[in-house]
Image 1 (cartoon, helix red, strand yellow):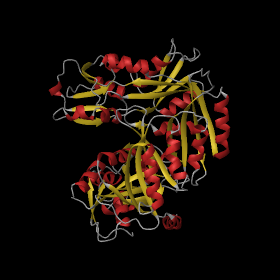
Image 2: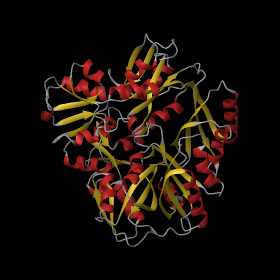
Image 3: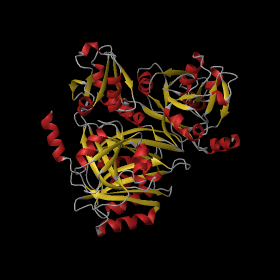
Image 4: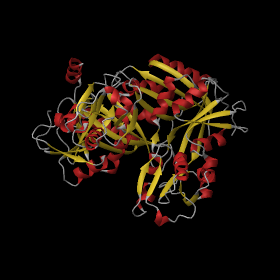
Length: 290
Length: 290
């Protein structure tokens, strides 16, 4: 999707069939080779050391909120944000072929996926939820085991990849279950006309500090799309703020807002400007699916 | 500690010896009976249905940040915040009596405790970290098992309660490892002169909305001590904001700020005013321990 042709090898966390891999195929222009990594840390490392051209990491889910450890990785590494991607999440209940619903006693998946299907799982009698490290990984484990009483929750693609049966689809409690991903790379990329910019900064711990910081956007009618706070390690109850806002560092108003913010911030890093991904199409497509 | 005498039975999440239980004994005036609960949800429920007089839940850690699901519980229940408590966290490496460091192959604990001791665990050769549902619970499991190659990470009190050996103490990577707890009850409590107030609100999704919301505090020189955002379920990319600030609803300036905030908020709930817990003593005590 409208990304830079130069990204061929894309790092993502999880097993083949992970939602992150699906997002990578949607986000980057083909041809693309997706490269599974064991952790989000490893995604950042593989891009930093040049093993992969770019990485794609989930940063926020519309039901469960921010994925905070992934925010922290931005300060531990020196990558830039070069894109964003929204992926509607549709969970499937996946079993060995031929298994019926009342045979199932255990459902395995990533804790977030289990949480997102909590209502559906409650409706199944005598079924126990069991956390696993990964959605697609739980399907891989399912195939390796012979126990027909075990089911997994993951994507349709994960079921198909591992030759397993989809017993139910769209089992998430809320239809508006969307994950936002960020694409990261070593160098900045063109952000185009309809752009977003991500920054991270810290402030002096004094009354009105955050208000002043937000004034640099409000006074310029710049639309904030997200604010997130994270603890500053070693300085209890001081915070880092991550802010996403409309605009690109190619625009004068954005660069002026950033230099205004520098007047208040004790630390400031621009994580990058990138094309805004508009959800409209996906929401429509999503609704047509339901 | 300076709390209401009326709270006798205190609900907390975890097994006997949990950090939450230690915080309850420090926070509430004796005599206190602590009542373990299986989940944070169960803590809220047991206070709401009158089984317990109050509950104490961790809301934020200085290293790992907010405990977001506990924020969400405030909207699903109707309890008020009646106090806060800061507890310095000192982790111990706990084994069966007589076990030496080089016998250990597996260290079991809550994922947050494992993360907070990551550096220490890395320094032990051939040791694998294994997540468990609870710190004190991992010591209970340790005692039930006979495997001397397994160690747990938990509090000194958990080791003593279960008759286990403390092989190392203060194994957390950062000395400033402090957890903030909130005390919850069905009715409000006196907040005194040095108070904090917690509110939760949502805003229209338009430019400058958060800036306007923060202006009600900045224009009155009210000190914000914490801001946290959580997703609004069913309305992707709209947020709830949780704010803690200095002052009590007994003061005119606070009630004016709140009614000013009502002008901008699409939803607003005051979660309560309560005595501010000053960290000073604990930090000093903490440093003397080190």
